[in-house]
Length: 89
View (tube, rainbow, N blue to C red):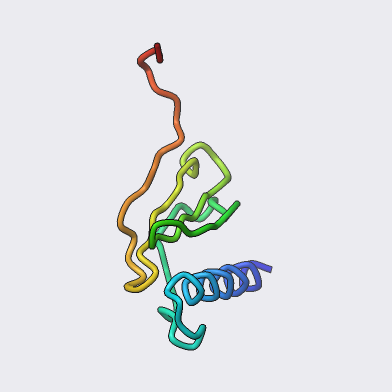
């Protein structure tokens, strides 16, 4: 079951990356592996401004949105979804 999840995730990321780059899906970045906690799962993916955004779900450690450059396949940043200790005014 885990192998199917990983294969499906890779297929979705490669397809999205190919569409974001404007090229043929065959010209996509290939296999993309981003190291995250094994308990994390991909909850959503979208592209904007030349970046691929991957929202993870799972335990608290997984509350992240990863920013990936679809041309290079490199993670270029992340947005944490944890609670801030400072009040918002």
